[in-house]
Image 1: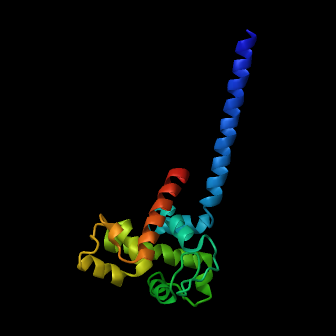
Image 2 (image 1 turned 90 degrees about the horizontal axis):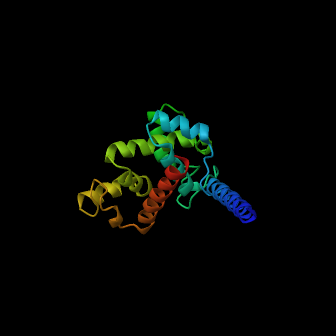
Image 3 (image 1 turned 120 degrees about the vertical axis):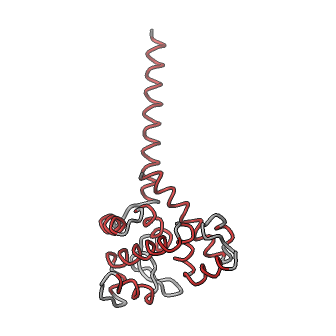
Length: 183
């Protein structure tokens, strides 16, 4: 009887430890893959019919949630938009834009989410849309036209720009992690 009691206590302790490990894993995942700017992401992902987990994966890859991020090519904000691209999209969504406003998280997420939604609509799949988000539609259109990549994204690993190739892979990985962890 005493042995059974000890076994039950040991099983309970192992169970408690496992729960703590699971909770620690959750804490780590929430730190590495946060859902910051939830109100803005949810609002524009819903409005433009883009999976919010994809928007989070883009923000994570582009700026790691630093709203003041500026790239070496002068892309700015959470979703790292070039000013000329942002200006074109701002006209579509009826926003008066200047360079300072582009750093505003609400505006940046609005324009970035609209932009990726337009690219998904244009190319019909996320993989090619992500390549265009990073390398520009002109490059992607050329790659499709000359057979470097397929329009359906089935051979996206053939992207000739290493940065874009790695970018697409990273976002797809993070998109899967966000989807698996956050649902």
